[in-house]
Structures are given as structure tokens and as C-alpha cells.
Length: 122
Image (tube, rainbow, N blue to C red; front, side):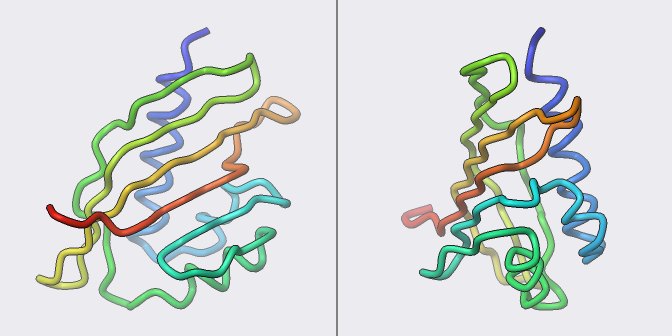
């Protein structure tokens, strides 16, 4: 099994949900006990805390570019990714580094760990 189609599908859904500001759709992509380190110093534990984090983003924030990240399958049910994403709020760019750990449970792939941090020097 190659992990790339799985990641491509999840990435496309993540971008669509993020850009639509559809928190219900977005949270379905995360494991119930997921962890997120986003653009602030707080570790967000669990889907509801992650929902609060994403619910607080600016209304105009969108993914402008998120090329397919590097993908490594570390076990049949665990995939890690690393790449760059460019967000923007109107004309204000916000480039980030992004990593995910994806875990397959009960046949469904979910984000178990998500890290996003600002890129500097771009």
C-alpha cells in the first residue's frame, strides 16, 4: 500500500474544510484524542480543544498553497508528513511549516498529531 493517495485525499479535504471554515467537517479529520501545536505556544489536546483553536482564526484566513508534503509510512497504520503551507488573510501572507502524524483506526485515517509553526526567512 502506498500512503500517498491517502494523504492526498486527506490533504484536499483538510484544505476544503479549512477554507470553508466548516469546523464540523474539519474536526472529522482529527482523532478524538489528537494533539495540535499551532501558531501559539499552547498544546491543544483533544478534538474539542482543536476545534476552539481553529474556531479562533481570522474570518479571512485561507490556505493559498499547500503542495503535497513529504510522506513516510512508518507502519501499516501510521504515516508521517512534512511540508510547507501558505496561508493568507486577504493580502497578508502567513507561511507555515506543517507536520502530521496520521493513524488508521477502524479503517479510517485521522490526524493524530498536527504541528504548524511560522516559517521565517521566506
